[in-house]
Image 1 (cartoon, rainbow, N blue to C red):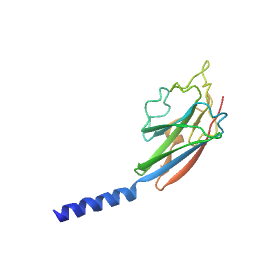
Image 2: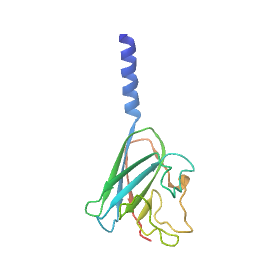
Image 3: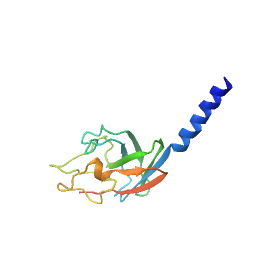
Length: 141
């Protein structure tokens, strides 16, 4: 029984040492109104996510002084991508004009988003092999 408990404890220590933390900071928010939604993706084909339902993990946070941030803990090593949107009216969807969003959006590894530069997981993803902080500038189209 002692050997089993020791083995389980050792496995827990190894697993926690392999778990990583990702901090995402959204910058460039034009107001503190509403919330910012951070969606974390870990699979090819999960981006684009027009209905906001293909994410691995998601957090919605308030804005303070034009910034918002989310911390994702206990992540296994791997490839991840993050999308951000400024849900100004807090309705949990990206409001759009004819085609483009009327609320601020951003994506890891994408300095701009337009009809000719549509997002995908491969381009947006990055390796997470150590604790990391990334910044995503929110774009208002």
